[in-house]
Image 1: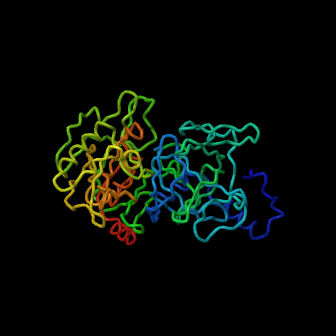
Image 2: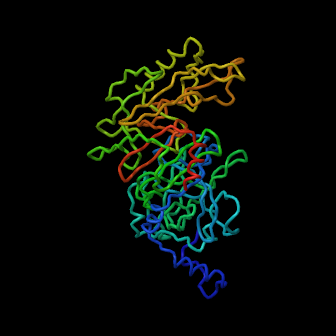
Image 3: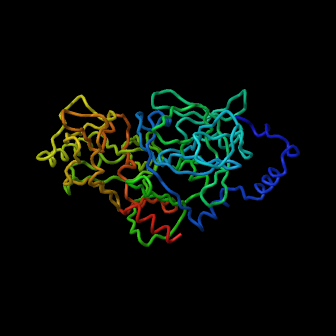
Length: 448
């Protein structure tokens, strides 16, 4: 990893690179300039649900301790000349990070790389210890100053309890057709495990409301996405655009009046008011669904988590009612020693080679002003490699947060499929509207 002082002096650069530097100097650097352009012309991206190998992505300490193998990915260009990278879109994380290669070989362009090469970029810069970014306290593990190198260091926690260290840096991010944006990110030195059957991801794009998130640094006041149940039809929209074909229902973002120790104030938190199964309301007291006096029990919308998690009492009520309604025609697994991914123990037996019955009762999450209905093939997940005689094992896609353990309700991206989700930071709200993502993509292609 190099500091900016390691860059060769301008006279030694070829003429083409000198011209490139002059062009870069002419580009407005402040985030506000990029935001102003984004506000007038929204940026449209492909959003993909991709297989990511276990162990490939470090998870911050506040995230779930077990691995998920499906993530949402978006491609963008970083550095000068631009290097194409694929990053995981995560509304539950703040600091964006890239796996930084120690060498400087190779140029930009071409297909997305497994790592970012800082030495190959003319615009890479380390963040010094005295900067405001190095004093940020939003992160679970705040940055620290390395006395020897005078660099600002950041740390991420892995799912197995180990950690990965890197340096806080800034770089130019080119997002679609928008202007270049200089943003802070973590330049991580660790080599993460990847395998040929997984998608190549170079890092994570933090999209929560913290000061160091990509959203905050780009001054993006509104963004939205539609997660497809197919790999190639998802869409991410950065900026504001009138969408007359989407009748969005909004629920306000929830923020307690006073800071609470276990409340994540930079998460996208909403108020969960109730749950219905097959139209029947579950007998869950309102106090169970609301944060307690410590802040534990908030409800977060998180694109970086695959499935949805409910705290123990709410989960038990859902498990009991879903099992009761499906008992006549969906045999329970009845194995007290089995829990898929250590948190999913509402499981059933389905004859191998067949799908679960189509008449599964829908599960509806009720919010203040909006709702999200989970139905059809999003309700059950086939556990890979698990069989009981001639039957496969399928589990309800709602997990028990107490078994993880986490102290929050988390709405994962599996239950956001074919739902347009809008994060409106200007008005402090989240909008929801059911729609097929391929239809939304087609309509947006005609409009923008």
